[in-house]
Structures are given as structure tokens and as C-alpha cells.
Image 1 (cartoon, rainbow, N blue to C red):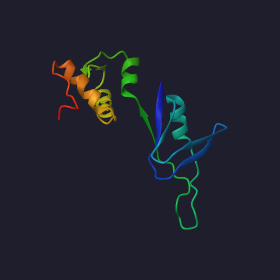
Image 2 (cartoon, rainbow, N blue to C red):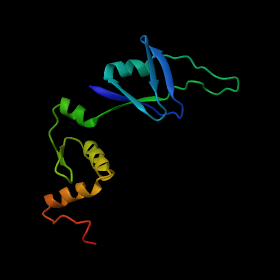
Image 3 (cartoon, one colour):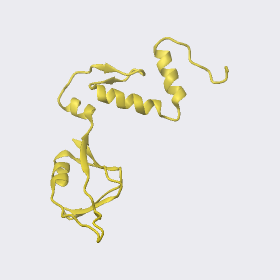
Image 4 (cartoon, helix red, strand yellow):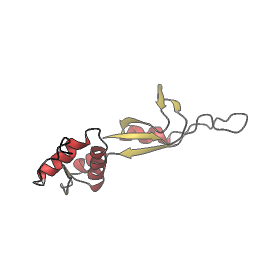
Length: 128
């Protein structure tokens, strides 16, 4: 199962690991397999500091797995349904989907689909 390895620091993270150059942007992530991510984040890297004591390559990494993929792998039942009719196994997965759906540029189409599911007429942007 793939997971995201996040860099929670304000500086980009660079490391040569397993003969590969690993680069994670500041407040960004890379995707890799879970076992590989655990080995990568747990690998020792020496602290490198500048003359003023500032960390030159800080390692502030964390692993985040997709709750929906994990629930699917472990055969958890579908328990939740979002406002647009999609079904989810976890509350976190549904909340993440709803947050992404409401921040889309085409927000009106998402709301119209939800209204149609509830039996309400679609709102026209020209009716104002």
C-alpha cells in the first residue's frame, strides 16, 4: 500500500538513500510503499549544522496513509455516504472528499448534484 511521506519543515529535505537522491519539498510529500517509507524515515542521518548552529538539512518527516485504501484492504464495510452520493468506509475519507469537493472551482456543479439527489431543483446562476 502506498503512503505519503510528508516534510513538515519550511526547508526542502535532501538525502541520498539506497543509492537514490530523495528530495521532499518544504511542506510537501512524496509517495512510496509503506515498508520502504518506514525504513526511509527511520534511517539515521547525521545532523549537519552551519557555523551559527542552524540545521542545514533538518529531518522532520512523517508518514500518512490513505484511510480509505487501508479500510478497503482490511475489508471494512461501507458505512458513510457523502452529500453527492459517494460511499466511504471511513469518516476521515468522507470528510476529506467533502472538503475537496467544496473547494473545487466548479462548486456550483457539486451543489447542483447534491440538490438533485435530495429532490431539490437545481439553482440557476442566471436567475438572480
